Image (cartoon, one colour):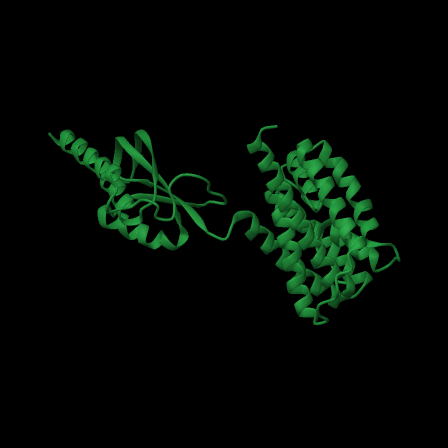
Length: 309
């Protein structure tokens, strides 16, 4: 194993350890002492824990086994191995660590318990591990029947919280739903990142001017696809450039204004982007002293001049 690969493995497992620690803290210091539930397999273990006097760590391992076996035939073996390590880690932390109960306020328990559990699960997922088997069930049913993973997990938890309302109490079920909502939102935020990027595709007859404006006004990189032909409101179009760029959502209004000033009839498509790596983002292009940008602009102007001759 080379040094770079070793550092990558260490970083991944260290972050998984942080995820295990946060999840364990959320369970032991907030949810467990107050009988509140989270969603998924952890929720099943917590629900059973309210009815039988069995250590939570044992229940978590027992209820995770079927999902891990399912995962062996559904997802990659690496994910299964990491998930086994992660679930064992959570079980050991819950069993041996004695986190003190931080608060008895039910609202704070729901919010901060969900925040810690969601952060832990999100960090684990970002590093190729699963702390809750319900995601594996979602992947399996998605592959088998084409059902949405999000809907499967949601139905799973609706059933779980309905049973909680019947077996424990409606109040506990409602607070547990709040915990789950917080945890799910935090998990998504950790996985997708705090910065909200958006993709934009632009089709315009004045594509050269649009390219220059995006580079100069927004300072973000762009990718150009060659369009051979198309048909729109202005009739048939041939030999045009399709512009694709990624910007921060805060700049979207500015993007529309810039394009509208150049070509009010431009066709613009925007779409959500969950993860961005590499490329030019966050105004890395120096719009004043970038010689490559000036050369790029000069080449575009020259090509435009040649095409009009």
